Image 1 (cartoon, helix red, strand yellow):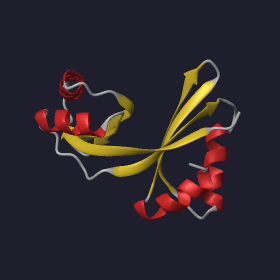
Image 2 (image 1 turned 180 degrees about the vertical axis):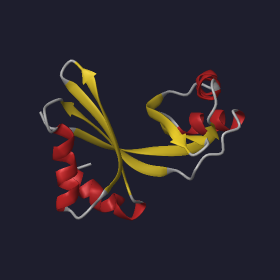
Image 3 (image 1 turned 90 degrees about the vertical axis):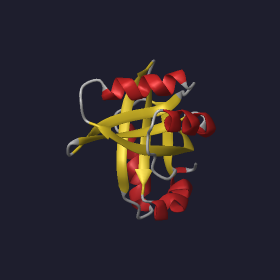
Amino acid sequence: MADEVCTVTFYSAEIANKVGEGARVLRALQEGGVNFTGFWGYPVGRRARLDMVPADDAIFKKAAKKAGLALSPKMTGFFINGQDHPGAVADVLEKLAAAGISARAVQAVCAGAGRYGSFLQVEAADVRKAKKALGA
């Protein structure tokens, strides 16, 4: 079975890197009805960066505003899921490399039941070429 590759919209926001701040933000977004296709956070200096792939942009933007988040402009990424096997992510990255595209960021997890999921970012100028290379 071939991987499923979808283009997705994602946003970034920086928050204080302190105990409980991520929980506070996620609770506020949850109370606003936000559901995520993907979410991850990591430290950037003394701040923390959240990268968020909302299932519904309109609901997300409304809830983010209410939560006081300053969002980046919307960006395009790729959500990939498929049958888990050794080298699954390497296969995806090789397709990009063959098209002369460098991945900006990659996250991947085993989804259970023999499946994996991955989120991939490329530079904005490479999105169109990446869509073609990945078959999105």
